[in-house]
Length: 72
Image (cartoon, rainbow, N blue to C red; front, side):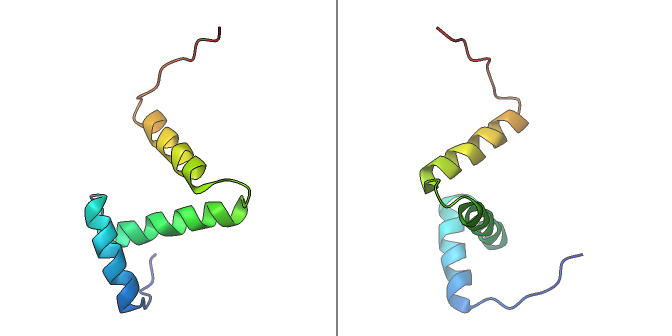
């Protein structure tokens, strides 16, 4: 069960602006940032671009948008 939490007006404004650009609601944008931040905290040697690519790949796999890699 989700509990209500207080967020700064600045964070909500930023999330609204960035979320619109990414077609996400402000809460979804904040969740996205939290997910990225958690992954970065747990894996400090990974670049932000690499983390985003991994998340994109996971979403593509979830949607069935994958092809088998052919070596050679």
